[in-house]
Image 1: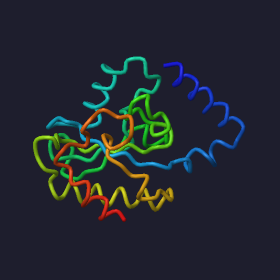
Image 2 (image 1 turned 180 degrees about the vertical axis):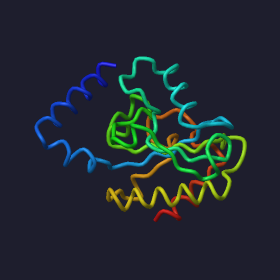
Image 3 (image 1 turned 30 degrees about the vertical axis):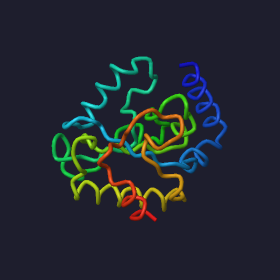
Image 4 (image 1 turned 120 degrees about the vertical axis):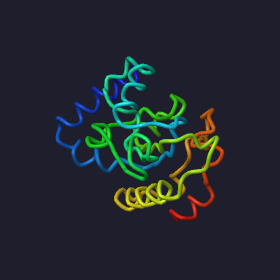
Length: 173
C-alpha cells in the first residue's frame, strides 16, 4: 500500500509541474490480457469485487482499463471502461511482483471463464481490434503484450487455458 500512496503523490507532483500531461498518456508500454473467471460482469460488478478484494486501493475504479463483454452484463464484444481507463490511471491488475506492468501496462479483461470454455469469436475479434488500436496509439510492441499468467512472477493461468494465445499473438502482429 505504501507503493500506491507513493505513486499517487508522485503523479500529483509530476502533474503539477506541467510535464505530467505530456508523459502521462504516453507512458504505456505493455498490454496485459485477463479473464474475469466468472460468467457475468459489467463495470458496477467489477467495481464492487475490487472494493471487497482491495479495500485500501485509493482509486475507486475497476482494476482494469478496459472490459470486453461476453453478452452477460455487457454486450457480446462490447468494450467498456471507467475512470481508470478514461484518466489513464495505473492499473491494479497484476501482482506486486510486476508493479511496472500495473504502472505502465494497460489491463484488458474479458468477461468469462476461459479455463472452462473457449472465447466466443465476436468477443475475441473485439479484443484483437482493441489491442491493435492501443498498440498503434501508444507504440506498444507485440512482445510487450501478454496474458496475465504468462508474465514472469505471476501465479495464475489467466486469461485461461482455453484462451487462444498463439492465435492472438499472430493476429496482433
